[in-house]
Image 1: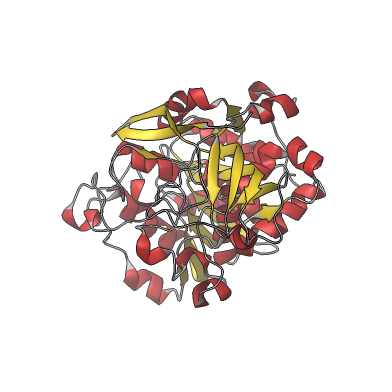
Image 2: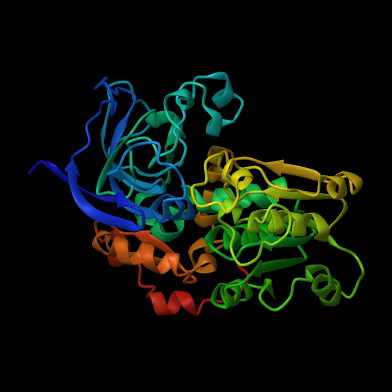
Length: 415
């Protein structure tokens, strides 16, 4: 019997999401109805809830589209149907969908900057799922440019057995890896990660993958700091100290600052911020400048936007912060920022899963939940629970994984 219905997680008002019925996807553009012969229709097997989704639901980001609209940009699925022009991807393939939509044909895509696709970007506020009428927290979704975008796991049964880990390759772990790599983390590095949410934990995990000797993770949330400590990070409770340098020096028994620092929080930083322009984000960034050694690197991985509806000052609302540029200039820092080009990394990270080199899901405490529990999962993430919720629309993760949430929470180790 053909599928004719779809259920999706929909933003309806600030602080409120619902699971609503929606049309089953078709191989055509959301606006204009042009046929997507290069596209595919997926049965969504997993879809993560991201901090970017939370910022939309909080009402801090001006939506690119009027409510109600579909959320979600971390999609893993099974291919059900492909367009006439798709030559590589086949029905029944288990695939990861990079969170940015890219054509694969323009100069930026060919150079590897898929987050800045010249063809897709001009038409939308962001060329991402969940910002462009292609929300991925759903039962089914249409994906354009399937041959270019989709990462196929080589073995279907293995992909299903490792689905909770594989689900994190659409955004979370490539993004964390991008932050660590951009900050120059390598063998023997000392790194400081600001933020112990899922992105921060993914970044800390990536720092160890790249050979870091010690990874400090700073946050106000003690539950999340305990999760960071569970796989070898040094937790820094920012509620107990604002002198990060002294803690670093005491732990390393040196007077040297860290080699690399990564902001995994962004414009929605909370908890402090009386300095600079009154923005917690500015205070955060200046603390990273302070703790990084001369000739070190700072990666700004957290999201920053030009229209923050919840900002405390006019300048912060426009994404402008009082940064200590004199200090970072004097210390000859390399500062790297920008959105993650997922396709540079997701294939390499998938091979780590194939060869059982790391458990992504355990490090970030990934917990699968049914689609109908999406609103509750959003609420818990807003409260700061130490978990990464992954929606399981068809119950595939639950049926394939023996790992229960309590077991995930107790996970420990470095690998």
